[in-house]
Image 1 (cartoon, helix red, strand yellow):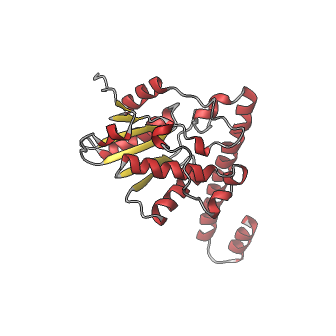
Image 2 (spheres, rainbow, N blue to C red):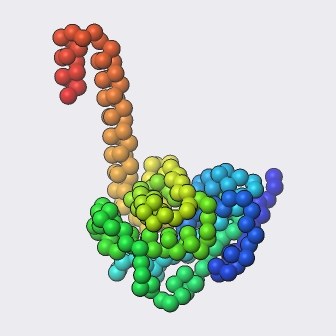
Image 3 (cartoon, rainbow, N blue to C red):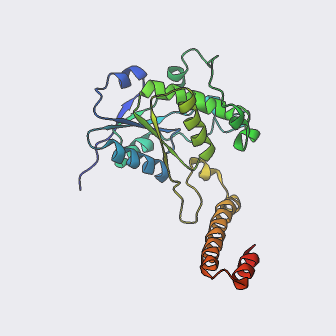
Amino acid sequence: MTTPTPPVLLRTAGELHARVRRGRRAVVMTMGALHEGHATLIRTARDIAGPDGEVVVTVFVNPLQFGAGEDLDRYPRTLDADLEIAGRAGADAVFAPAVDEVYPGGEPQVRVTAGPMGGRLEGASRPGHFDGMLTVVAKLLHLTRPDLALYGQKDAQQLALIRRMVRDLNFGVEIVGVPTVREEDGLALSSRNRYLSTAERRTALALSQALFAGLDRHAAQEALCARAREVPATQARAEALSALG
């Protein structure tokens, strides 16, 4: 079995821009602490870019998207392990800049605003989070200059906002959403899962269990409706459809 070539570690935009571009460049943006969900994104990027393309993984813990009292200081930073996972999944390079490389003048005075959608759902409880997320995504898109960028569907609101930003601000990049990767018990893979106690993990599973139960119920109702529609247009059919609600 061939041992994968370790990805090149790049610390500055200058180092990244000095690389000779070959084929399409696909970028996977992360905050590090990589897991199988990230590896799936990287493998998908590898498949899309092809053997002649290039896959770049960014590792950057973005201070702008952490609110007061959140876990910026204790967010897991595991660069050595990240390089190994990225390499096994097919990354050519890992771009892991320091904060002053991404924000050379300190916190930026000009930022991307998420608009009305940024204040809903998760944004309602994390004011400013999506503005910070979009600002760093915009900067990393400019710094990495990809042809396409891949994001997990697990962060559905984030993905929707990135797609809206790219459309509204005319970014010349293709955005690819990749299905959520789950653990065996159904919990979506996340770097923050390591924070959960046993009891909290059981509670967290309620969301995915409810979603899957709703999906199963919807599929069952659709099957029953399809069967009811096959019945001739009689009083019996009307009664069957009425019983389904």
